[in-house]
Image (cartoon, rainbow, N blue to C red):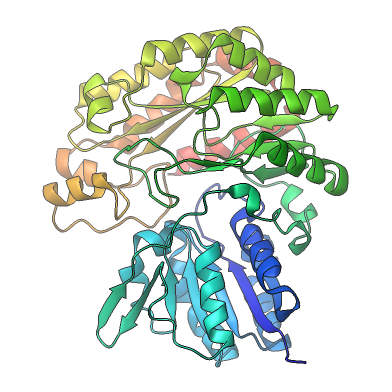
Length: 467
């Protein structure tokens, strides 16, 4: 019997403020797909560097304990410095292993990624089929160069093949590989996408992939055709996590969970009828102008305690420029209603768009300050490669280099260089104006886990003041 093809997946750590730590759902989905496709022919390990007390030693120990055929690294754009620090270590202790990377960084910046000679190839976009095809070829000692969905070096040239077709029926995917991790380290005290929690035992879940909108600042990881799990299949995932792994809070990280109202209602009714006493949140935000009062009532009944909406800008001109095309009065109406029935309302805003004037910047801040929102995030605009906004910025500043700091809390930006306006200064003022004592008292009264709220806001305030 042949020895299994041994795979190590790595989730990098990044030295950024308020790093969000949640279960590595993408890696877990990839692992379950590979195990279904290859069975006993693969052996899969995972090291999540974010939860290691001694990161370097833990990684070296894993590499020395087992000889891996493949090392796969899943990366966000701001995690790129991990490659500078750890690729030499990985190569030193895994001299024969192939190394590939995937995720948003690999998809958007494959040319940059392939400058690292240790990397065999890059996976572009949705990873399951592509990774499976790569592993199949390597198992057979065949070349990989015609595989869809990869980029690779050919001498001094970088070749990017056309993308693999997206998986249309997500119900055909196995459940994520929950046995790949120990949930407990993810339930310790650290920052999370939701900022606050109702229960420490939480997990990310995903019911659909892709977003049909064309906002100029957003990635294109999953394409523009939305693919959905059936309501029954998705709720079964929640049941597995609830009954087998003791998860009590679910963060649905779809791009737009409420895009299909009928489907959302089916999911929420199935949750209600299941008898699970759980908490829900959608930290990637709902599309605020697609919501109706009936939706908000049903979300609360199913266990939602927060309502996140992404407004981004109060300027009608910038709404058109960014192609967000949000009906802001409708969103404000929904915020007011959600707040009135006891939901914590959270709004996301972006400051420093290309061509944004100081009046438009202040208009956005004033909208947030005078709204019924309980919480807010003011993000400094960061143009990412392979987005329309990045191309606009390059026309304004041809020498602009991608920002990989991850510091959405505030840094010297292209906007400040272009306009002379210190957007970080306005960001700090915005937070101070927004979180006045009465608003915080209202938030404190609504918070289901009050000590968690106090801890998180103390850490966040330090981050803002020190940025």
